[in-house]
Length: 334
Image (cartoon, rainbow, N blue to C red):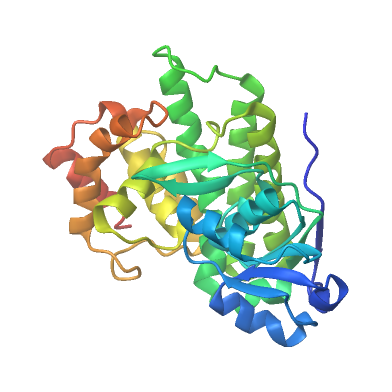
């Protein structure tokens, strides 16, 4: 069994990390770097703005960046975390992660989620020396980005259902009672912390990040993420393919949970309650999407999961007609 990734929590704990770990290759994104650089300390040996997880782009970065740095420091969201992991794996430098949002569990998982072809493929094995969760950095972002961090935990609701659905039809990976029961515990914990996250409370941020941390460990222990990844993530991947763009990951996955739990007949009211209590944006008027795009995504979903050979789920057996499209519209309008 793997160990939980090391983590430190606190307000302002990322201050002066750049000086202490100098010279470091910093992998970041514009907004979190702007929020942190004034107290980061030191001058990066190289500054990389993470904007793509295409394999060719990451391989080019690994060749171009200096080899005499002391470490890689990832600062930002999932793209920055995954880029930093890839460079750590390729260049054999120590890795430190400073997530700017609790939006994904990328800082607590070993592999990089590469965009390859039309889908997502996982590669690498990265273990950080430390993950610094700086409450001040996280709360420097707009509140809606903080609240959207529930997506990759809320996905346990639909992911677990899809896993059971698949195993009953003879598909792997094999069912595991403990992992499945943990999925239910994660959802109970998420429902409990949601109001505090809406208020931006440090304790709620810590509890959410601890859920991401444990989920990351289980992904490594089991060699898969079926207990927390299913048709809701596949919906998100299909949306990106159909529209040629993406939304904030946690919000897009939460959209997937609201829609797919409705189509599963899987307590959609529970998903709605958590989304409501956490204050996660989910309506077309709040996010940059149109219902027409949601409908196109659903229509494309069954073929997409088969073509990409994604894990078996309800998406494989969906027949999308007027009834299903009406249910999707209802799922996002509460």
